[in-house]
Length: 206
Image (cartoon, rainbow, N blue to C red; front, side, top):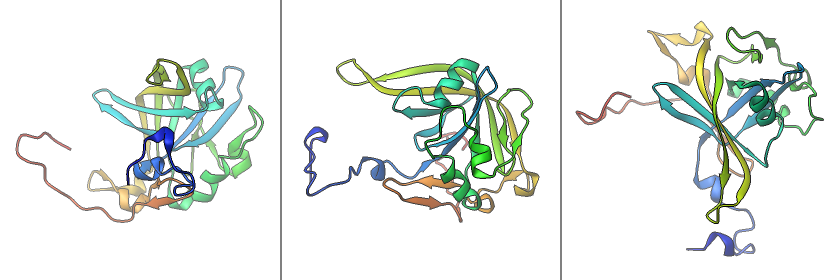
């Protein structure tokens, strides 16, 4: 099968497979605080790491400047919290369309913990959180040059919180943390096992 994206046969493919093909994707569970003190917490399925020196992560707000993107732009900060299998229900609850500024931490029964270098709170129950300073905001455009309505927020990681219960021999135990990944439609995956694969000589470190 081949189809041009603008001409998808919606009888054969009633649900767009794009997000299912670009998968699994890490979930950016983004917490922010506006200048007036309002707090927001929301999961983003368009999230990833983009560089390691300096460490850069980014999340894309599909639909413009929703609370997370608006608050991050206003404050210049955000926190990326690791969404895990144990926190799946709480993570899902924070995706509810609450009124702007209503606290998703309270809605989902989560605990706000103070960060060290940014004003936004982190999810205390999460095994890892990344404190980030916004370095670039990209209003993503389509091939005609028009704004698509999507906003990419890139942040430099300036601080890292790790629950030491998930450290093994100096490494973060990903399998023990069981992070969630987005797989398109209403599907998710969970990392429960990992394997090592040595890179070819000269290809660089992982």
